[in-house]
Image (cartoon, rainbow, N blue to C red; front, side, top):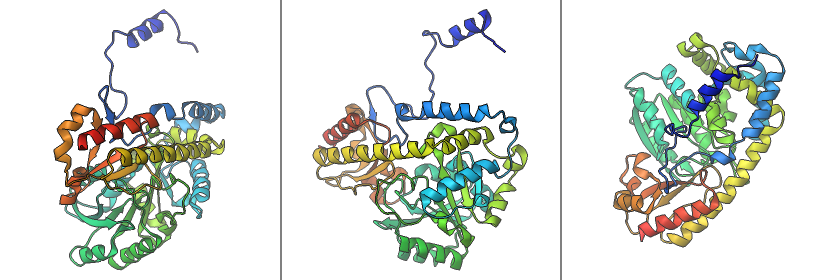
Length: 395
C-alpha cells in the first residue's frame, strides 16, 4: 500500500522545512566550535548505517511476523543462540544461550539487577574511580555506595578485604576491562581472587564488560563471563560500544538461578522480552558477518585515534601523566603542577575544549586532579586540536 500523495507530501514538507527549529536528536549536545573530549560516544559518520540496512532487509525478508510480537521472556531463542556463538568466538570461552538474558542495553540491565537484588539502604562496592552514570542508577535505588581504590592492575584486593571487614555488601560493581574512566584492566589473578571473595562473603559481582571486545590486539584475561557458573557473577554486554548505541540492545550473562530472578521482574512479566525486533535485525547482522566486520573496524579505528591523542597530549601537556590505553574509549589524565579541574574550567570554556571532570567519578580528593578524555567521538585532526587547546589552558 502506498501512502504517498498530496496530504503526505504536504506533511513531510512541513516536518522537514528549513524554517522549522533544529531539535536535539542525540544524547550529546555540543556547542558549535567546541571540541568536547568528554563525549564517550562513537562518531556519527562511523555508525554502520548501510550494514544495518542490509541486516534489517534480511530480517524482514524472512516474512517472520513473530519479530513484531511481544518477545520471549529471555529474548528470542534464535538470537540468543546466534549471540552465544558470537561471544564464544570473541571471548575464547564457551557461552551457553541459556545463560543469556537480552536487555535494552547495559544501563537497563544494571537497573534491573538493582531492582531485583537490592533494596534501599543496602551497601554496594564500586571501584574508585568508577562510571559516573552508574552512580546515578545506584542513587535512584537508594543504595549506600562504598568506593574501593584501584591501581594499575584494577581493584586493590587488600583494600577490598579491609572494606569487607567493615561492610556486608549486597553486590560489587566493576568495569574490569579498559575501565571507565581509568582504562586499566583487572589482572587475571585479581579476577580469581574477587570471585573467591564473593563466594566467601556472599555478595554478587556485576561485571560491566562493554569494552572487553574493544582491545587493540594485546593479550587479555578471560572475561568475568567465564565465571558465571559460580552463581555469584553477572556479566553485562552491549551493542552500544561494538555496533551502535541507538540499538538499545545488550545482554546479561549469569547462572540459571540469577537469570531466573531477573526474568521474574514485573518489567518482563508485563511487556515480555526486551527489543525483539532489534534482536531480529542483530541476528541477521551477526549471521551475515557484519558484526565481526564492524567490531574489527572499530578496534582499528579507535587504536589509531588513541595513539594520535596520546602523541598530542605528550606534545602539548608534557608534564601531565596518563597510561596509554590498550583498548576501550578513554584516557585518564592527571593534570600537572598540582592543578585541579576547578582551576581550568573557565579557561577551558573560553578555549573551546571540554572534558569530564574527575570529581564526577569518585569522592576522593585525588579525583580533583584528573580529567577523562575520550578518543571515540572525534576524528584524528579534531583530537589533536582538542589536545592543543587543553595544553593552552594548562599553560
